[in-house]
Image (cartoon, rainbow, N blue to C red; front, side, top):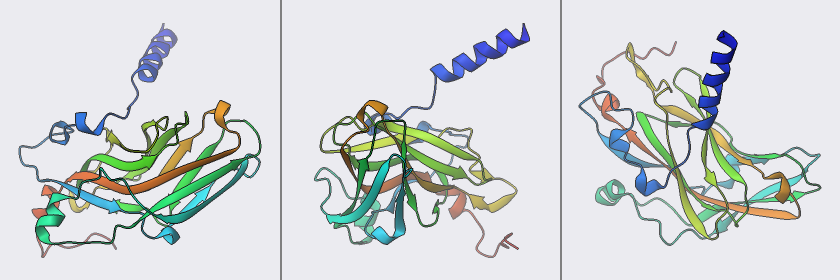
Length: 234
């Protein structure tokens, strides 16, 4: 009887995974709200201006993968209002292009990884990135780590579309992004993107482009931190 119950629970977990949503349908103010005080801010985590910061990998038995920087970007991308009001103008001319040349069909994953994990402070509600998917049935996932070292891989969406599209995913409340005993310990670390390739479409060449990785994060825990507090990093 215990074994049957375990199978039922496992089935429920499979049927209801954390799935990506349309970015316009996600309300960050309602994600993981456990306090009446929030200060949500959209921030640009990385604009993919420096190709030397990123690396790409895939199994050599399946093919070769390479990357480079290109000028361009989505025309529909809107600037971050807080940056406009503050007069911040960071360079935003380039995108990251990735090309995979497959040797044969088979299950394969392409890893797009920063040279070091990208830290996002606060309590992160959503992550989003602009992508050109080239209308392949591959799936884009983001690999993250919370403040306690727990890792998670979240599905951002299918790449079966043409042109630029903004993919977004909410972060589950099961991630431990804050330690209430130590105010300096909060947020997540982004460890990379994973392209899970559809086995029937792992032939020829595949091109994908990335631009402007953003997060919506609650900065209230950071703003209330005392400036003269001690750092527990020794």
